[in-house]
Figure 1 (cartoon, one colour):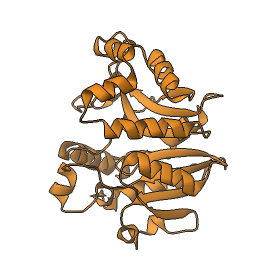
Figure 2 (figure 1 turned 120 degrees about the horizontal axis):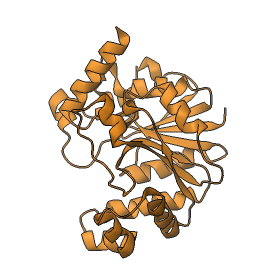
Figure 3 (figure 1 turned 90 degrees about the vertical axis):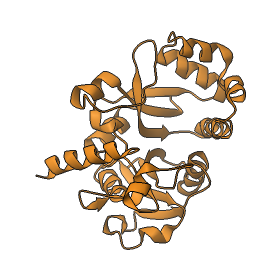
Figure 4 (figure 1 turned 45 degrees about the vertical axis):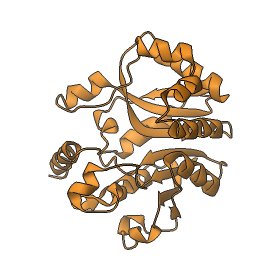
Length: 257
C-alpha cells in the first residue's frame, strides 16, 4: 500500500441546494440509493489495494457516528477547518507525507475502485501534485443532458473530477495558492494578479492549452504539476444540484439492479 486518502466532507460556503432540498446539515450525509454519499466514497477507496489509511474531514465528527462503512482502524474522522484548502492542509499534517496522499470529496458517490485505480496508477514520475480531469465530450457521450462547468482550454474543455494527488512537500505550496484564491474569490483584480495577467488573458480568449496552464501555475507555486486524463464520465459527476442528485440515484439504481 503506497497511498493515504483524504475525503473532504465539510460544508461549503453559501447556500447549498442539496442540503436545503434534503433537510440534512451536510451534503456528505445525503443518502443516495440508501447509503450516505460519504460512505460510498470511503467504500470505493477501501476497495483499492494501493490505498491504506483514510481520513474524513467534517466539522462535527460525531455526525458520522454509527456509519458502518466508516468503522475500522484504517479510517480516521478529523475535524474540518474553515475552508477546503485549510482542511486539506490539516489532513495532510495528520496523515503525514511518508506516502502520497489522494484527496477527494464526499459528494462524488459514483466514484468506483476502477476510477480511483486509474488515477493512482497513471501518476507521472516527478510530479509534486496532480489533478484528475475528464474531457467534456467524454461526459456528454454518457450523459448528454448533464450540465458541467468546463475549464475552457484551447485543446479541449475539461471538467474537474475532485481527484487530487500530493506527492511532496512542494505540493503544500499549491494548497497555499489555493487558499489565496479562496480569499480573493470576491476580488477579481487581486485574483488576476495572483494567477498572472498573460495566462488569464490567454484563458479568457481560449488560447491557453492545458499544459501551458499547468506550467504557469507551477511557476506561481514552485511545484511540478500534471493532469491525469480520466476516461470515465462518472468520475466528473459531483452532486451540486438537485438534478445531479436525481441522476446519481438513477445511475446507482441501475448499477445495483
